[in-house]
Image 1 (tube, rainbow, N blue to C red):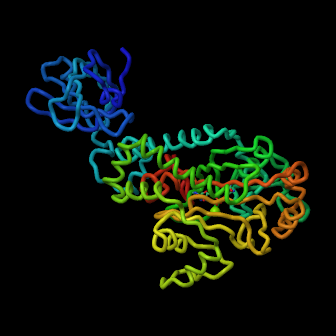
Image 2 (image 1 turned 120 degrees about the vertical axis):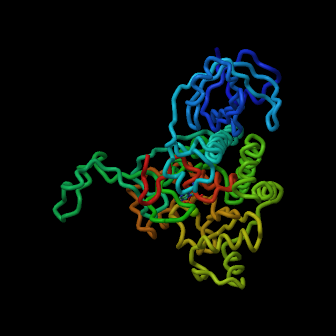
Image 3 (image 1 turned 180 degrees about the horizontal axis):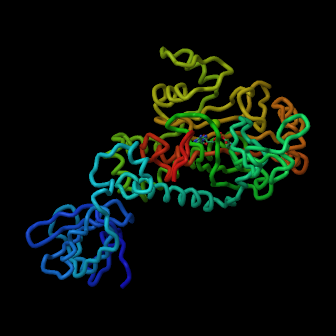
Length: 461
Ligand code: 4AD
Ligand code: MG
């Protein structure tokens, strides 16, 4: 018999006989002459109620159908007499596929998120994490749909790389050298020419530079893959391994880039609003009461756009005392970003034209000679969700920028070549996948939207 998922069963147009349902027992309630099982198989938030008559031969092993046990039930799907569900299954047979004894950690509700992180191998079976990871899956699909439907080419950029796109030096080294006795050069430094790639290699922090190569051939491209940062940030918004979506568009300037970022963020919200309605309602009930109002608010209005200089003025004129003082030329800290988006504008905000000193080498220099065409999208509750820019397409200015950042032109000759051969204005951005997921679920810690989170000091599972 073909298996019916719980989701299919609950959405059934009519009774089904016979039906086969398989899943994990969430709860069991015994009453006189019957037992009620709630069976969940992850296909949706809700479980399916199964009624097992004490007169059935298989009732002999009902005591083994404990919370966490896996079961296979055959029977018939009939309209439910009880409240809260349209359909239920009256069992004919019940098989216990795998028992779960009283040490199964998800016995009752009310575990802390910290505890659930320690059992990341079991937490997907809880309501909260079931919902989070279903939304994560849908969001990934919506991202591909957004770009594919607009003719963008999906580019696979390398995970192992020799370049440092963001220039922040937050790189994880990839090496096969003996950590205890690496080969040394005469000056005592490690001789990386004897390493696996005959040079220093790292896990990528961004696929942007390679995406630019593809944009200068296919016009509109995007990447969607894992990125890695050896950044010692212990916050609820930073992970050492996270996924990023990086569109790169040829023949596009900063304004076009900001338009695309806004359209993209809104399209993703709209998609999960429509396709993950049940899971989002769960978040709105148990995680963040304001969630749906906030998502709809974001959909309805244009994002506020303002220059970095104007943003600094607003911060300087605010009554607020910040932990990090702000002045023109310093980076916006998370507290500043959140003030702008949560308190001042109460709306998503796109800040653009940042001082060149605090931004990477690839951003296009503005005519003022002081700022570059950077832009960040900030959203309430999180702060920065998107970072992007128009790229420096002028060969001489790019070489200048590289010199200023102490970057060796030879190491990036392929990147510079794009400006030698048919250069075009182009722009792009990176959306942090997990930050977007936090935004659409209301979940407050990035560790809880990643199946197996990697953060400083933590690499379990
Ligand atoms: O602002 P970032 O560093 O920009 C880039 O990497 C550019 N190369 C993107 C581009 O223009 N193609 O990172 C982009 C986004 C951030 O806005 C944030 O959402 C997310 O990536 N992000 C992180 N998410 C989780 N953990 C971290 N440690 C993150 N660092 C950045
Ligand atoms: Mg950034």
